[in-house]
Image (tube, rainbow, N blue to C red):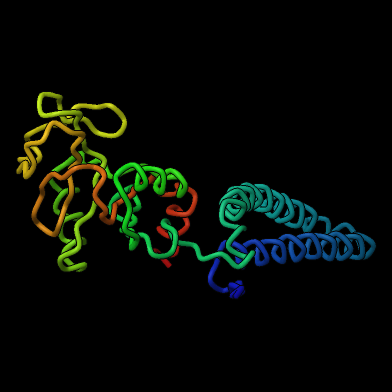
Length: 231
């Protein structure tokens, strides 16, 4: 269902309407001053001193208009970035059911799949298999996984045979500074790393588990959310 967004939720647009009204008022005021000046001039030279006052006032109003129009342009550019919100979409950095941490969105699947099937699932969601790159990210993922109880999730970490190095899905090497892998299988098969709450282990990649996908947040949307937080 589409939920229209009220104009009051986006002060940029309200301010644009206000500025437009201000410009019209300034134009009207200058016009009235000029007409008034013409009538004053007809009454005699003693009123010519008004010309200097009116001229300076109108000049100041013109300068104000130009300055304010620059601000209007900047606000319009900002409004263009979030205009899609008026199409009924929810302005959040991550899709529905995804969790945000820093500049990434995380998806904890609820479907049992093999490691290869999970990899394909993440790709279909325009994301990648989970790649843990910091201790803080690891803490976030573990804490989030704990809410799923005893469910275990595939990560993007695997190796081919007992002698092969542990590699992330993108081919980058795994750093043991992040965590230690408790290998539960000694068979010379393709092994993959799973995560279950605060526990990390390995299993044959053909086993069925849930998975965790991740992708970058939308920069334009997160900018809008940050702006809304400042209202």
